Image 1 (tube, rainbow, N blue to C red):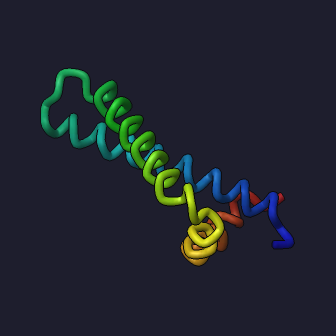
Image 2: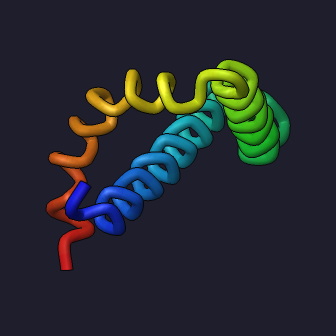
Length: 89
């Protein structure tokens, strides 16, 4: 891949935006539910979701890392094309 560093930056940006979106949506759900501390609950719930997802990816990719990444590459290329506008030097 000729733009490896650029691809990595876009991948990191997409991951961080996804985590932020999950936290915001969960906080909104807790606000609508009338929870006492919705932002704290949203943060804790987002943290749990991220940790579980990372553990699942590690579990699935433990033996077949290369095949898993090649299988997921087309999905990440969509994000790469969209977010490359924001990360481009």
